[in-house]
Length: 480
Image (cartoon, rainbow, N blue to C red; front, side):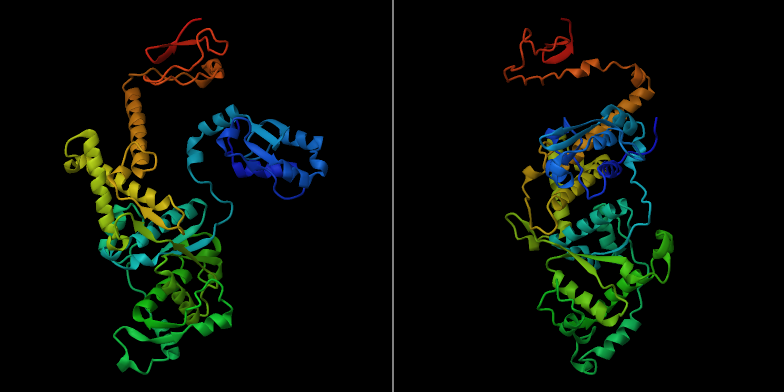
């Protein structure tokens, strides 16, 4: 049996190569109603653009039918349909390959080449949790999710800022967000001297409040560099403060001193080009204007600052029935946590919140609820949170609590089965090759609920299956 890992991209690449020179044509079928008949489709319009009159040459059919290669799934049939060229895989062979090496598919594929360097910056983490608004909590969860997704695809991600507030670190731990902690402050002397040389109010220190160095005009920089696209036209002067320089110093240090053991190749070198690193700022809509000023100030004070910086601006977060700005992130966590405890007490009885064995479970369910509702809407869109108790349910399908609760149920079933197997309560599962799958060829209609009429074919209907019968709403083996 072949051992290489099957892949959708590898199969698509081989299918497109079989069509000859030209652009991509084949697509992976994802719609449930079509997956019964096909796994991949070459749309008719794309074929008409590739071949004269849309007629696919016979040699292409033969090439597709005999498709082979590293990571390419085996083909069962390829046939023309009204929608285009339809292809179905040898599903039993694919299932056998995948299920025989589940661990290889569960782990992310190792990229052939080093992925990009990504500097992911979330300004909301510079404060304390008591000041963290719901819109900022959304940016934290989006940044954490984005970091995980980028790493899965082979990128080397560095997270900023390094958190200094111990209370913020504890809150992130509650949220199951893995974020680095700060060890020492970065020197701002070089940036400070450059700023003082350009400040319009540098010599008028008597009129400035403590921590403020002066003002810089950024509008001219936007015009000179041709960077007006994407920037607010109202960006003009920037008040330079010690805190702002500290932020820039940390960004600068992270960009130019990338950990050598965290990345292979160019990124580990001390002279790596700044433009080879992608800088992404994940900010709330309230923070966007200030972040634009910070970008321009970085260019103003550092000739080697990255030319391209991306902004992922998250939309506002509102709470139905209450002013969302009055509820902080820790308060919202405690609110959802209390709802989870209440829902669990109603389901199982007793005061489970006082049981140490349930503490971790309630924490996981609460975080799942918050992440599910924060990440289920596109980041740029406005998010409306519903604080009603009905949203915390183990029965509805639109709740993170529902998802985690049922995952826990499945995990419990698997663990129980494993323990029973170790105790010898179940017989050893026979080899797959010895099983008879012939009974799976017929589709049996679902059993009616107790209060519903039985609409399935009668026992004498030509469509009724003859290998089983129903007794007391339980499907059991029967005789004809």
